[in-house]
Length: 176
Image 1: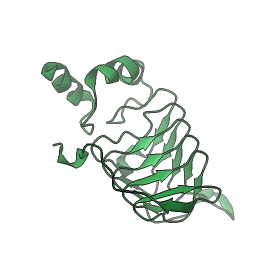
Image 2 (image 1 turned 135 degrees about the vertical axis):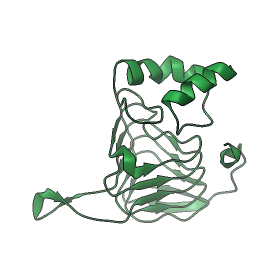
Image 3 (image 1 turned 180 degrees about the horizontal axis):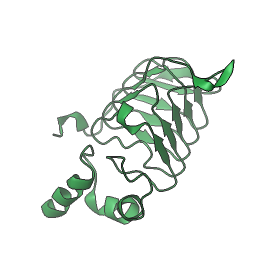
């Protein structure tokens, strides 16, 4: 197992906290052999798309695009903490086209996503949004404003529904 993990770290230098057998079974062949998202340094599903990967910073056990059908666009930057979980068809879009000139992109602050965040299926996170630690975002929500830590949010536009207790899972920030 240790040899397999070391081998996969060559191809996925930014990925820690993953199960190497699961990576081999699900994404390695399509990503590294067939070439879907080949140069993204973390596991990405072959039906997901990652743009401007150099402007995306990820923490441990955070693999944006691991689920199928995700669209991750990091033009203005995306900073993701440890232990991000995303459902299928999630969109994280850090830049919009200018409404007066569709060939230009508007500048905005990077998207900041804290530790232990779960983004449900079909949700969309828009430019400049800050999501605190320990947040759950319901399926099909559109996050256009900041969300505070320790909350559960849903809707279009996304609003905090209630507070959430502390995260009780493994602390992935302790991984090397």
